[in-house]
Length: 90
View 1 (tube, rainbow, N blue to C red):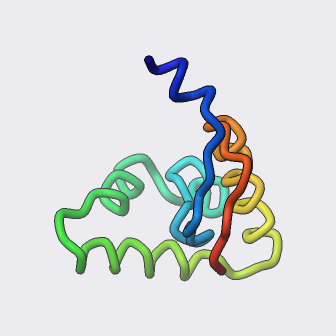
View 2: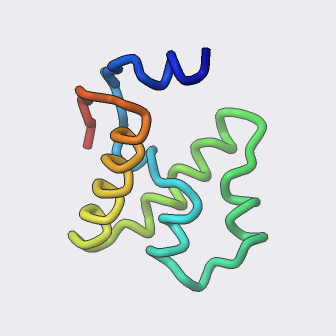
């Protein structure tokens, strides 16, 4: 069943680019972050916690190269998930 689902063609109709940053990519953007800081940043139990995490990540996106990296990483993940169409929000 998992293989069948993976093979299906998919679409992402609403993806926030800055909300797609995973911990590994964030560490590439900010190598000063250690594992514990990343775990804390990505662990939240309510919407306010999510907003704090989202803000903290966005404050690290300061140069065009940062946006190039997070775009590249997102597109790689979408390709791995067999997503053929995506509407990205900036």
